[in-house]
Amino acid sequence: MHREVDRSLTGKVGRVTGRIGPGTIGEVMLPYLGGTMAFHAHPFDKTSVFVVGDEVLVIYLEPPQTVYVDELPDVLRHGE
Image (cartoon, rainbow, N blue to C red):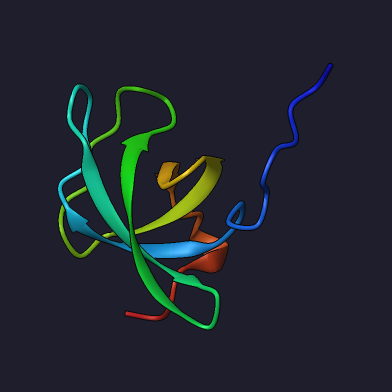
């Protein structure tokens, strides 16, 4: 029996509000249900570090409120 996987946040871009790194629980703000919500966050590759203010890409949601994130690809970056 397969568990239903929630993919509603996969591919969303969020902003880091609490440092994300190996062995830590970071935080990222994401657009969700018509608003913005904070999610616990971990690096998808288990080695990357993202500092406050970085934009990241959600790879996977682990219910109820934890996401795994990766570096935002250049093609999705806003002009700086």
